[in-house]
Length: 182
Image (tube, rainbow, N blue to C red; front, side, top):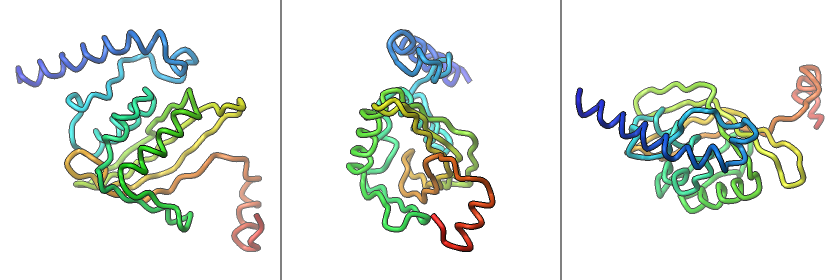
């Protein structure tokens, strides 16, 4: 119990020290988009279970820590988006390119997890991202990801996400389903 307490105390202190810079300089913090509590993307301070990996990933995105975010993915990571045929990510380098663009083009990007469920090495997470584009418009992105986690990293994923938009109500959705209308 003593070692666990010391590790938790170290992680909390490390996080508090890191937060001093973040609270004063991060644009998302000043806009109230990041919570006013210590966040840490430190791998040593996070477990390897699937839910801990997910928490580490979204914290890394919100902190704009590209390398920590990419480190949550296996070198041979693959995913598919069944609702968007042909869209997939193959490898950690592709993950890095995608996050690099997001963090560059959405300077106040934050990510949040609404809920998670895990069973063994499988994780289901409902989550979202929000940020302001360079033209001043807001981007909101929500959905569910299903990840396989191995050795503290996402190994593969099935992605069910989309950009939030005004869709015109359930009638419009039924019309799109029955008539093929856009």
